[in-house]
Image (cartoon, rainbow, N blue to C red; front, side):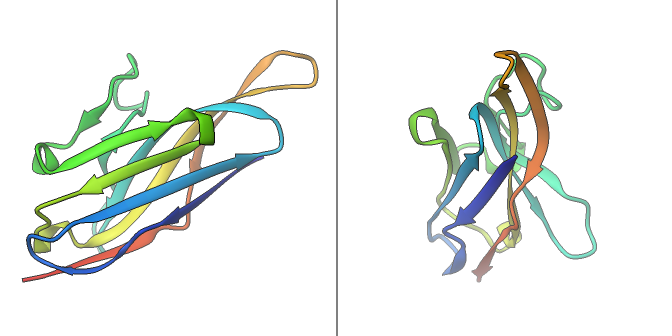
Amino acid sequence: QVRLAESGGGSVQAGGSLKLSCVASDDSFCTYDMSWYRQVVGQEREFVAGIDRTVDPDGRTLYVDSVKGRFTFSQDPTINTGYLEMTSLKPEDSAIYYCKADALCLSYTTAWLPYNDNWGQGTRVAVSS
């Protein structure tokens, strides 16, 4: 029902910048709450930034403390795309970054149905010192 495609990862030196994009597509008319997570091999996936009602039921845009002031989340609902602009990158930001989207989709019965916990394939970010 919901498909996510991330792009924008890459390799940069410390202090550099990258902008990740996540495009959502669906077979219906859907609205999305989007967020970004990251995972390092051997560690749990952690929330980074965005709107995730499992993190904040009020649907506010949140950031993990380690990226505040450096990363900016944004979302363009007109094109179902979420972004994560990352500046002043540090080696500890290196990870696979995943887009997550929780969708509310209009069904053929005109009821709005939730399709939550959709994940992209991940995009690698590598920051060298």
